[in-house]
View 1 (cartoon, rainbow, N blue to C red):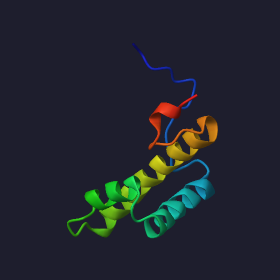
View 2 (cartoon, rainbow, N blue to C red):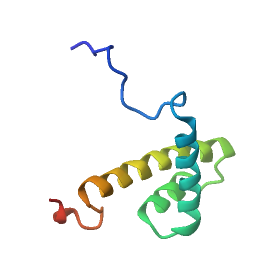
View 3 (cartoon, helix red, strand yellow):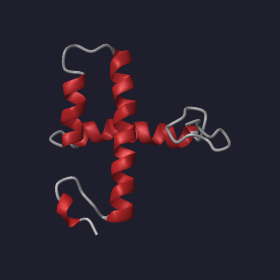
View 4 (cartoon, rainbow, N blue to C red):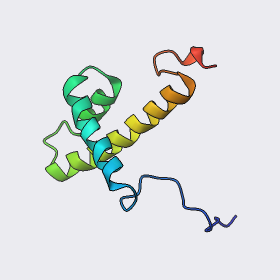
Length: 89
């Protein structure tokens, strides 16, 4: 099935809204610093634990920013948290 080209594909594109992208990345660095025991922080540490280069850490931080934005969106729209999957409305 051919993909429709008349609508932009969803995703975290660099060209759109750079201020929001920078804010999300800054939030992810703050998240790592202030939430050291969270599942997302453990995920980040598992990906960067073996002396990862700065480039790999930056890539992982962008991925973490995406995950945080998805988690925040889910929390705001459905009041659902990862620890309580049965409490979905």
